[in-house]
Amino acid sequence: MLENYPKEIILKDGAGVTVRPLQQGDEDLLFQMYNRLPQEDRWFLDADVSNIETIRRWVKKRDEKGLVSIVGVLEGKIIAHAILIWRAYGAKSHIGKIRITVDPSFRERHLGTWILLDLHNMAISIGLEMLVMRLVQDRDSYVIRGVRRLDFSEEAVLKNYVKDREGNPHHLLIMVKRLKKGWDEKIDIVPPE
Image (tube, rainbow, N blue to C red; front, side, top):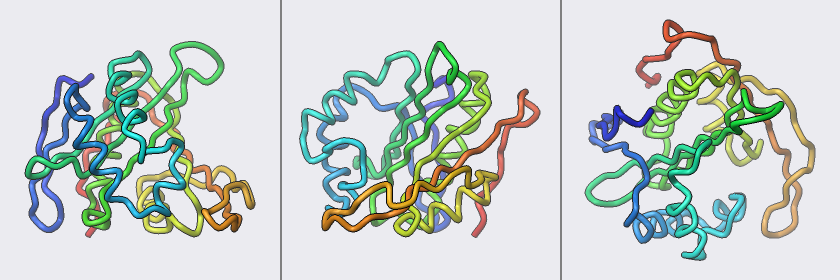
């Protein structure tokens, strides 16, 4: 599944970013990337990325079954991290969950879109039928617009489900993409300008 890596993608501004699997030795670079995020962005993640032990656990678990973890690297710095998680057994074994985090200085340059396309194609290759992304409705509007262009649809809104650091409630949006079966449905497009 990861045999096509590393690969280079070209952002809309011409920058060449290497996308590759997360590997042993990436702990410090990944820690630095997550700590370049604004504190408010880190708050909405599912783990305390300001703790180096969290990052070490992620790197250690990178080869577990049901998990793909890839990074975008530019000039020796990790500038994006994405994961695709799925279950090997049970009622939800056809569903993949995606989380993509991009360094603030590389947002709105289609890096996340390119990585999402890769994860989409990977999900098809392993036989998943559905992808799910959880986004905070009023904070992730740019991401929501982007995934809608890739045929993710709003499946549910959990009203006042998450809270920001000040305790203000926000809606959590569940975005879902139903995947077509077969390689002929693989997406290989250029993200919109």
